[in-house]
Image 1: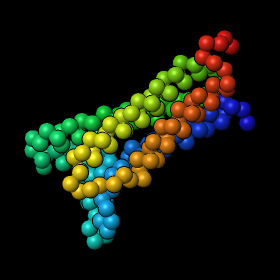
Image 2: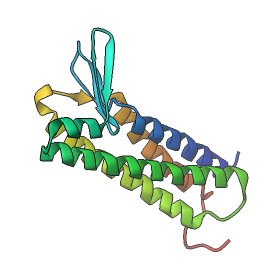
Image 3: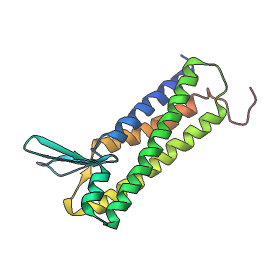
Length: 171
């Protein structure tokens, strides 16, 4: 297998991990014995085996003008959009690396930048979420680690998919 295909496969796995982490609600979890979690798409609370999910729009309507909730909603929306875009760039790397022989210089640079920005956005969002939910003593959940691993794997896959050639060299 060539480095280009290995990098494309890593980018594909990274994109799937980013998408999974984006749409799961386990970025922060309550301490045991409670269940549920907080994620980019909303909050899920579980009691007695029954789980109830609310997205950020529902939470904002219920909070009525709470600036902190508005900030969380905005941060989560921006992080979700950025995550989907970063995953899309990584999917483009995967498809280009596996299906074509075209040069991937520009898209590789964009995907590395996208994965890095997604990583930084995730860290900023988690800081905001932890600050807001500090009274509940929320812990870091598995979705965050899957997401962070996907960002790193996607960036590494983008670099490896170049096949060992530098960015300033001609084909």
